[in-house]
Length: 154
Image 1 (cartoon, rainbow, N blue to C red):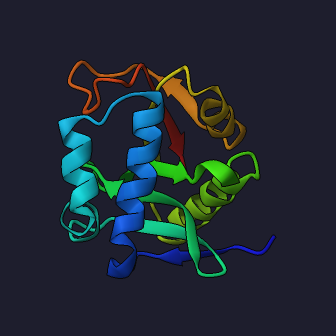
Image 2 (spheres, rainbow, N blue to C red; image 1 turned 45 degrees about the vertical axis):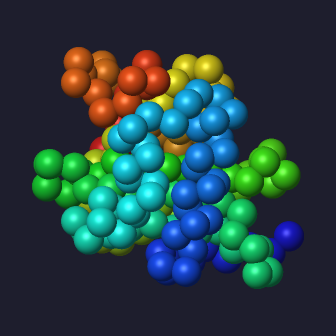
């Protein structure tokens, strides 16, 4: 199985939206904050200095992830990671994670943070495998569904 991880291209904005919306609807629900960010990734992620990556297999986008800038210098939120259902279990998420870590180190990011939910056991396993540690979730968390926050110093 050959995959390529490519940077954001406007042509794939609908893939970013649909991949993320699918997993949110499967496991949770789409919050207003999600809908806004997913429908305008260039405005909310790319233009403020963030990055979106896609996993491409032949001519099909099968996964995505974003690194969204936070209010802290060189601290980015690893967010919007999604893999198409028929490609789950093939370590696509781990490839995306490895790519994000290499990219973050190359660009001198200081820290990555992420928000998740404990019922996403496979995702939490991957985060821990790559060195993320749990920290308290702040009261004004941007996601109602998040019950775990993790961080990785780079």
